Length: 379
Ligand SMILES: Cc1cc2nc3c(=O)[nH]c(=O)nc-3n(C[C@H](O)[C@H](O)[C@H](O)COP(=O)(O)OP(=O)(O)OC[C@H]3O[C@@H](n4cnc5c(N)ncnc54)[C@H](O)[C@@H]3O)c2cc1C
Image (cartoon, rainbow, N blue to C red; front, side):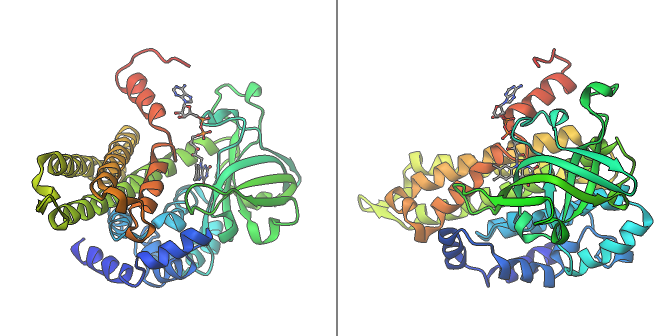
């Protein structure tokens, strides 16, 4: 892992704060950065060697994203390219894997859009309404999705749809299916993508789906089992996003402690005041603890063990550690924390996302309260 960390750091050195600030101002996609990540093979670490990837585990991917974020960069522009293909890898047919995985590994095809969330269903995924009706060898899809990131910068998208109405299934999580949508064909032929302006530069969008035709050959796995297929992908996603938070937290602790050592007010470094020093020390401790949970969750995932609870706990601890470290770092910088050129205010905004997406903190607390501690569910 130290070699991976070193090479990610070297690559990130070519993308300094100035690069990200300009993109942030313009709300533009970091194409050069994503191309550099692709060329260096970092985005295909999880793809097995037989399909052209490096066949490494989730821990390797986690270290890559952590280092990207620690360097002040942002992996969100492409992180889904790492793990979204996992659904295809684990549940796709031999033909689908041979057709797509080598092209995804080489970067020729981008699969970095993942369409789950809908305006009316929110976190309650079983209530999605986007429906795919099978007619012979095609599905006709109708519905709407929201917050679908990177759809404008992706060639393919995994789309979660209902293929049976919720009321017609034994369990609410039955009757959903995953379709691989070729965005190059779909846009303008039943699919409209509309960007959403947000407080961060995240290339997120809403999708309007109106009689979109998707070949039945693009169904992943069996019809009706889609929810199960995306769940293990979601564990990978939570662990990797937790790793980004660890990277953010380390960025903030590095910056805050450096500034506290150097900045002199009242004739001494501000870090000599324990009211400035102790919050940074606490952030460091919280980050190290959260990082252990991320390692534990990634280890379980790589061993093929159940890891839903650990993935959730890692995401909660890491996102809270990064947010608290962001707050301390901003406070430590005083007025300069608000100046664009320090990159603190940008990272501060960016790291806030992770308490909401890909799953919000309350829902993690509910998972632990009900699934682990067997207390009654409130909904
Ligand atoms: C920038 C961005 C990028 C995203 N990218 C993607 C993407 O690429 N693909 C995708 O499918 N989705 C994406 N999402 C969606 C994201 O996963 C959801 O926003 C997130 O899961 C929360 O869902 P929601 O926004 O519908 O909130 P809601 O479900 O409406 O919840 C709102 C608030 O109420 C709380 N809440 C809801 N129910 C309960 C309860 N029973 N008990 C206690 N509290 C509750 C939640 O914790 C939350 O704080 C993205 C979101 C954002 C903001």
